[in-house]
Length: 146
Figure 1 (cartoon, rainbow, N blue to C red):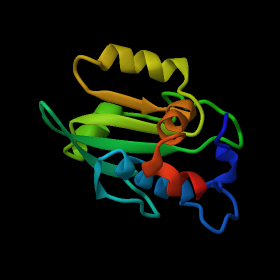
Figure 2 (cartoon, rainbow, N blue to C red; figure 1 turned 30 degrees about the vertical axis):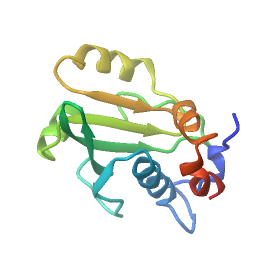
Figure 3 (cartoon, rainbow, N blue to C red; figure 1 turned 90 degrees about the vertical axis):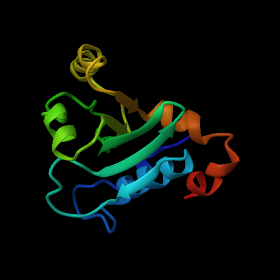
């Protein structure tokens, strides 16, 4: 791994900027061409960290984005960490679910994604997917340096 996600402050504890991973995720998605409609905030969020718009050849997709930063604990993101995905997507008037994770999705979450793929669009960016989009991409240089 070229990118060390443990350098991003944890959302727990006494960090100066507990929202760093959500801000990083916002900037990452903007660099990929998504339009951020709801940005990071602090406090109870109703199951959404970001809401983004993706324009495709087939139309537009509104994504409910969930950011999980477990790089320091190295814990995978489980279905328990992402409860009621369909309900959250519907309550925020979104079309699909997107996870941005500094580790990897657990098998339970991947199986849920596989079972739901025909009913609900899913995208998961784990640490290696994020890294592959950043490294060598000149539009991501500032994000990489940060």
